[in-house]
Image 1 (cartoon, rainbow, N blue to C red):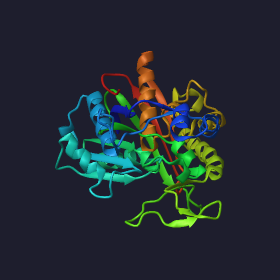
Image 2 (image 1 turned 45 degrees about the vertical axis):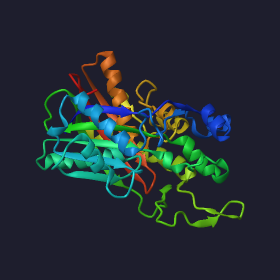
Image 3 (image 1 turned 180 degrees about the vertical axis):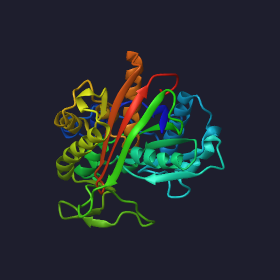
Length: 353
């Protein structure tokens, strides 16, 4: 499988920690310390200026940009995959709304409910489809986490864990056009691993989806009844297990490819927040100039983030005039613990940007 076009989409203007502090009554230094993120981007559901309003808008724009970068028309696609943890509605699936907007029809579409490992889940699925006889497809990762925030932005209704989640994440999308032909410029996928390792472990990331009655009432930290938060994180479990699992994935990639991490050109490191991304990089023995780390500037974009990292890696390679390169990618999803990794070989040429 060869990736022949990539894209990234970040909606609106960057929102700084100071912006959050001023708009929502938060503390700037607390945000700095809790997340290590400096910026994030959010959709605007009431936008009248073209800013994406939701996941479907983000995914459509990412698809159009990736297709433009690859130089192939949407009509040449044999399948469409969207990975997301924040669909616009349960039905119709957002992927089919995107297909309609792209003007394509009569092809298989897939929507994978996923988190941080979603981009690689999409590529894993795409590789199987290409091996089964299809020629070309499009994989999109997109999330709009603005849904986690109360519509009236009343921080008094939100507990500290939810506030941290809101400051940690950001909206965004990325996409990859994939081709069965391994010859030519692009990113050749040499190895792709994906598996669940969560047997017997509690989920460290939970996002609820409620029915018509909304969130149930639970007992809050002060003993009073409150609505159950939509999103929850076990940061202690994440801080403990993500570095360990990242090292496991990296070791496997080195063994399978025969490449030493010190010799590859770029490593897409796991991205929860800016502070943890730096600790993981150091723990893996990845040099600062090797790491492709963007979460501090973009927020955690969930399903989009690996595509954004890969897009930026390729942009950097093209800017340096590199003819070829080797890339490792690692993602760890803490929901029910999924590990994923990929090894890529880059060959310069038209498109792929």
